[in-house]
Amino acid sequence: MASSVFHAPCGAPSIKQLECQKYVGLRPSVTLRFNCVKTKTVTTRRLVVTASKSHDGTTKKLGISDAECEAAVVAGNIPEAPPVPPKPAAPAGTPVVPSLPLSRRPRRNRKSPAMRASFQETNLSPANFVYPLFIHEGEEDTPIGAMPGCYRLGWRHGLVQEVAKARDVGVNSVVLFPKVPDALKSPTGDEAYNDNGLVPRTIWLLKDRYPDLVIYTDVALDPYSSDGHDGIVREDGVIMNDETVHQLCKQAVSQARAGADVVSPSDMMDGRVGAIRAALDAEGFQHVSIMSYTAKYASSFYGPFREALDSNPRFGDKKTYVIRVIELYANYREALVEAQADESEGADILLVKPGLPYLDVIRLLRDKYPLPIAAYQVSGEYSMIKAGGALKMIDEQRVMMESLMCLRRAGADIILTYFALQAARCLCGEKR
Image 1 (tube, rainbow, N blue to C red):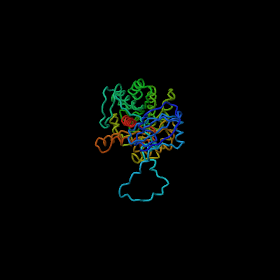
Image 2 (cartoon, rainbow, N blue to C red):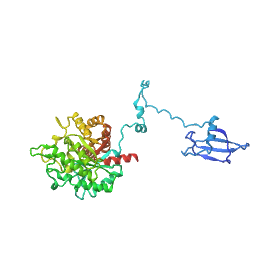
Image 3 (cartoon, rainbow, N blue to C red):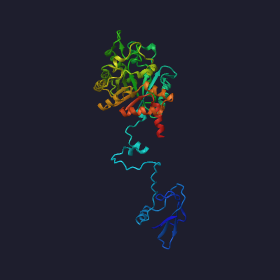
């Protein structure tokens, strides 16, 4: 049994049999018993600190002042600290070798979860997500076969409930995609700028319920076109650029009038960003932002989305007005041409679509332009992860989170993703 004794002035009444289960500074494997014993000198008491063998993990104070503690240390009565744990033994047979002469060992900064968290370069939070939501005129929420877990939401009920779920876990930005009744479609897509159409009505409803919700909208004619193209199609199959831009300006103004925060031209017409900016400003909507689909590739990853909106082209394809020369995914420098044009015309956000297969393009725009960069994790990317998870070929949650982190690491400030609600719940669970 070990013990130490120190003397300290004490004006307080005598304390008999003061017990403490743990004293910070002594070995944790013992229980401390403090006995204040009166001596013949009135102004001085002897405090005997005795360490016993038992220990239950609780901590109590000695009941002496800071000055008395300091005096004891100055007098040489220093409490013992817990012992340094022994060095873990190596497995039998481990060779004994001299340490490598390394001036830098990167593993030092990765040796514990706390240190890895401290030095994490890229962070992901629900605030980075924009939740794409499909809406329709019906009352019921209709499942989308090619996109497990996604629905065409009834704009009055299902949509409001889904937005409430997203806000509960920190996702406060949505982008709306309408499924328009076939009877309202036309070759010129006039329904796109109907102030009482599905999208304006939905914006009014959401803003009434959630005034601080950030609403992005899609500016393009394909949901409203009887031809299924993003522009007006001439009888010889040519997309009419300037005439289409005229319609898009009216569509953007209609959406801004309803309360949209960000309009997002996805049509890929030349000059549409500048024209939309001028139209918005002329109508007093200088505060409405433009997120331009800057580098939108003619990708094969879009298939499930077209099923969701029932907007496949009636004829031909969409390659004539998206980035493509040799192959669907061949061009890199052309993204710079589009970005330079969009920045000069007044875009507030530059978007790359699809996301994960085009990380190099995201990084290219991040390095070249100061504007915020958005990435669209499109329907094909989403559905492949869902399918792989359902077949137990991959860990769906881990792959989901890894894919989103990769988009952030490449330089995306915001990510349009159908995983927004699921990923945000995962992030909130990690924090809890």
